[in-house]
Structure formats: structure tokens, C-alpha cells
Length: 177
Figure 1 (spheres, rainbow, N blue to C red):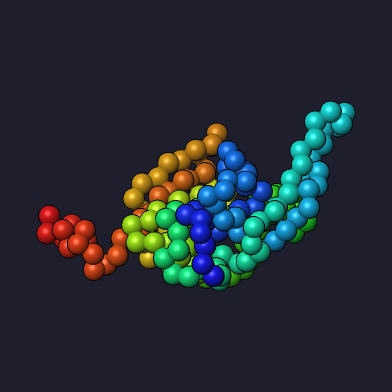
Figure 2: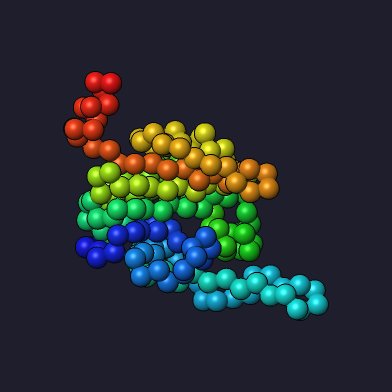
């Protein structure tokens, strides 16, 4: 499949960190659709939190339906929880890792890099509540450029990668320096 948009969110979930949930430059992909539902309500009923998953394309990030070198920028924010209950609001909101999560995430990294154009950037988001980021980075064939920890306990990591072709002039130049 060809895309005429420059950005891919490979597992968009509820599009929680996007300023514009309908950004016209982004293809939003997720393997699920969830109609808007209340995921939390205060005891007095005054505060209600709703959540929905409404991707443009329903697909698994391990098998993206796009041609090689399709996007300038890819966002990869996969499920990160192993201990969330199957029907818990955390599992609904963030998804859950399965027992084969190492293979799943390794395949996800590979697919995200496959659809990324040369010199394109991948932004990877990971919360290490259940699995440390050092374990996750072992699953990617590319080295990160830089990253940032965030959140009250610094458990959420934002990490940037670039798809630098092995036989490029830049790689040759870097090896000569």
C-alpha cells in the first residue's frame, strides 16, 4: 500500500500524546478499534474520563501494509505492560504485551524501520513499569541517537532513531572521521 502522508503512528491507541488527534499528515494505525467508553468516573460522577481507539487503518505493527521507504517519520509506542489484567482499564488504554513480547517488539522495530525512508526518524516511546528499556533496546538492530526520560518517576522514555543506509556517503564519511 502506498501512503501520501509523511508520518506513520504504527500503534496509535487513543492518540494520547498528539496535539491534533486528526492530524492530516499522519496515518494512524492500530490493531484494534474501540468505541468511545468511560474508563474512569469519580465517585460523585462529576469527573469522567472517556477513551476510544479509532485508527485510520486496522493493522498489526508487526505486519504493516505499506511499501518499503514510505514515511519520513514513524512513531512507535507499543504496549508496554505485562502485568495488567486482561480487562483492566490499563490494558484497554495501553494494550498488553503477550508472552512472546520479545519477538513481537523485535518484529515491530524491523517493520517500522522497513517503512521508514532513508534518513527518516523513528520516535520510540516506552514506559518501563514492567520491562526495563535496556531490555527493549536489545531488540532493535539500530542504535538510538538520543533520548529523554519523563514522568514523575522518570519511567517513560522517548528515544530517537534515524534510518541511516549502510552504504551511504554519510556512513562512509563517518567511518573516515
